[in-house]
Amino acid sequence: MIGSHQLLMTNFTSGDGGVVVETFNSTDSFTVPAGVNTIELLMVGAGAGGGGVRGAGGGAGGVVFYSASHTLQVTAGETYTVTVGTGGSGGANGTTGDEATNGGDSNFEKAGGASGFPAVVTAKGGGKGGRGFEPTDGGDGGCGGGGGAGSGGKPGGATNQSAQDTNRINIVVGHGFAGGDANGAGASATAGAGGGGGAGQVGGDGRNTGTDNTVAKGGHGYTADITGVALAYGGGGGGGEDQPGSTAGVVAAGGDGGGGRAGFTGQVDGVDGTDNLGGGGGGGAGGTSPAAGAGGDGGDGVVIIKYTTS
Image (cartoon, rainbow, N blue to C red; front, side, top):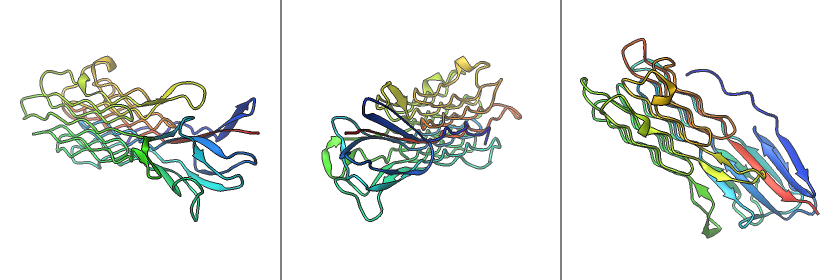
């Protein structure tokens, strides 16, 4: 595991002209104000860690978005527990070291049940990026992690983010995609890991020829404008490779929405996903020891609530 998560911002509220936006960067509670009977809700699960040593990109956190056209009915005075998922750890830099871990779920729930929608709404945490060298599969999650590179290659993980509200199955509120597959190779060829899935796009598949694995970029995230500014959330991490390039520009990039870039020879560790965007961590670089990088950590999730006061 490399680095540490970025410093968490405190939870905060902004508003103008009766429109209020509350942003939760850590676990807290929300009480529906007097006079409010509908809310918009954006939830992002935490990103997963990227795999180590030609490791795959971590999957981004899944996204759930109840937009202005699909608001949730609430009752003034109800109190909800808001849980913000914590990013997963990147895989170790040893060839048989610890694997990456999945990101944590973000939840919006009311004990005993809620009025007007499911008692628990969940944005799933991302699936871990597979380890390379002695490769492992990508993990399932809100967005799937990429498959680790090595002999034969490993498959990327699937999304398990629910797309629809169980009470309104005719609308789509959940967003998540699968991770890319690795195209592994024998000892005489390059092995490229898969990119982590994003909330708006699948992760790229790795390649096993040459030294260019830029195609294994992390999947792009899902764009929402709940804060008044269009912003991508949930970008997947880029997949690492056995013989990485010497600069950041020739390795797999993370997806828009906070995905971390893969490692390269000048910086062998994958880059962390961005906190409070739910980005997946980048995969660690391979190569000859000691040029064997750790995976980047996944970014923490976020929950944003918007409503209009009377």
